Length: 356
Image (cartoon, rainbow, N blue to C red):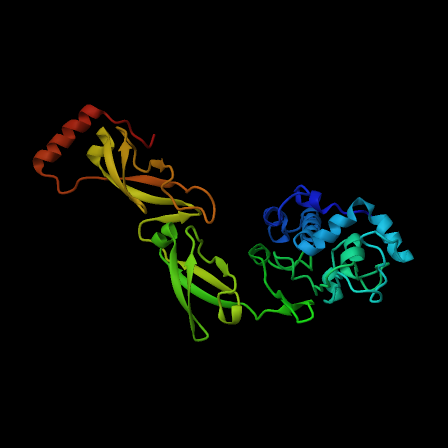
């Protein structure tokens, strides 16, 4: 049975904080999740590896035991099978017998261990453990964690199952209560609630808030800037009885702007004078009015990039760009004098045939 270095799997040092571990897992999960790597067995293997690592390191109690285990896991395994040696942190693993101590037990569906390594099953899964019934005992307070939903970032029991959105959102599911005798037990939170909200593109640029009616209770949620159409946002514990609320956001189409991620596109009408001779043209953005310098002899359809005038990136840094496409508007209703002047001008301009 091969030792699993969970810190190396997540690419974090052993001194990493719980927040650093969660951040590393989410980044790797986005990269390797089967939903975005369909038909890639290596990505699926890597996703299982990081899910297993997060299952242990994402839970402070499991992480503590794992750190005590260290690279001497074989010695601890043999000690457990033999009854243990005094003074060792994993000594005396005799199943459910013996004095009280810290114990981790897997009480969920055995199928939830699918995809996890023998190392995990032996030390954290309660499978074919030499210590009996998948239990770890150690002098100290008694704690019990049932299933896989207790590790802060959500359940990764089925290493390659669940949507990427659910995993990255950090599924709830299990909380810890404390009974009078000091025993912590896993309790099931009520199911999450769903709601929908429609926002304008202007609200996407600035962020907004909505009041929701949930089972007779009114709650207010804040929608961050940069939200995408169809995106589900999780609000933890704000619903009735502490339930989570998933808000699905719909973004209304805009009469002027077309959205492409954090970038925006729009047309900018210009006069024949501005296109031929150049000038400064006012362009309205979602953040206000800016001036676009049009060079002389600008062709119809030319696109200019206005850096940073797009939408904010969702919970990220910076903004997208605005792409302004020139649309030359020709004068109409020419008088006889204007027509004669136009003919004289075109004779002087001597424009070649653009179709040849």
